[in-house]
Image (cartoon, rainbow, N blue to C red; front, side, top):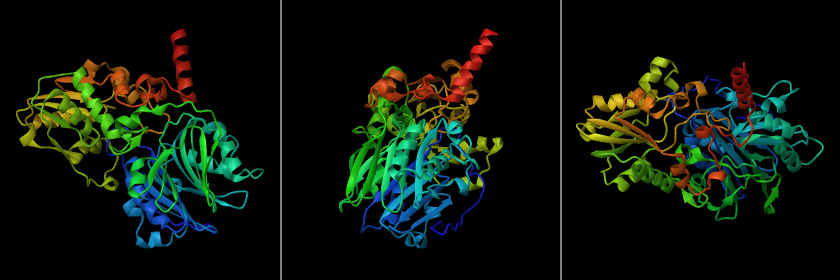
Length: 483
């Protein structure tokens, strides 16, 4: 626990195991200003609703107007906080965070909220969802170098002593490049700001008693009883204090919301731009059925992201839907070491076929994505071993051909099966009888935003924010072609 005296205590255990091979969620953030409410407990509940966005560490910072107290540990929300921990977090103003590391190691030192004293004599707590692409430029000359882009952000804000905290946040936000949905608090105010592209979600809600909340997804608003007011707009800073909520535009908005949020990252009950993720995923399945019909006996989802799309596929095709795979929700992440041999066992630990459903049947298997291909290959083999007559894979996104630099922990380009293989080669590798990916047009048609309002970089290689690492790679490719 951190407080104004700077004392700390925490778990210094190493990286949690990465059991699955798929793309990882990045982080979830939550902020609340609500005098008279138990903000620590409300933040705790909200983090449960955001747990899918990060399972490595969790933390809450609370201020009572005079002192800021932070509790953060490695592990799930339920492991990090007990009744005594929450009782020690007394105040009316809080930020919360659950983390999956995309920069910096998975360690207690890098858990969030980031806590630091500012040059203005206030104490900052900051939580960040996203990933910066210009950290090397921003960190040049800083000693010691911050361990994460979130820590860098907090340091840059905290070291500004010539302006108010709000002006410091605005000045730093204008220097940042990449994806960032951020909550910040001192002893007086809650701030929230979002990058000009709005790559990651951030919503504003109102509590029945008049308090304000901001959260990565509407599910966190729902669980604390808040009513959705609106999104934090791209390029907007909002501030909440005793005078209420006010807005400040710090950059021109150029919206390019992450398309993969719709495919995989967000909870099905999250609402973005007036549309639920569940209904969008169901439409993805309907479009898959139209693009890739096949004769089959049953449609089964790969839990959990494939469920709603599988229901849409079944409804549109007339093929019965059934749960042919059961997910083990209690695989202990901490005890599975990230060795290649144990990764290969991961699919068997996580999923089990229901023989009564799959034996002798022609299956349509609906999943959200294929990254390296190893999990899909093992899944097909496992279904055949359970007696499946045919396995037809249907994927609710186009092939992933390029890595994400904006906060999703995907494999490198060299590890992405969609970067070097065509669909037929991938089908042969995974061993399916047929394989079809939803087209990019079909995917865009399933979501509310227009194509020019979406980031499709992982499918197309077109990055809306210039990425130095990507620019260097393209320059090297050009050099090799010219040589």
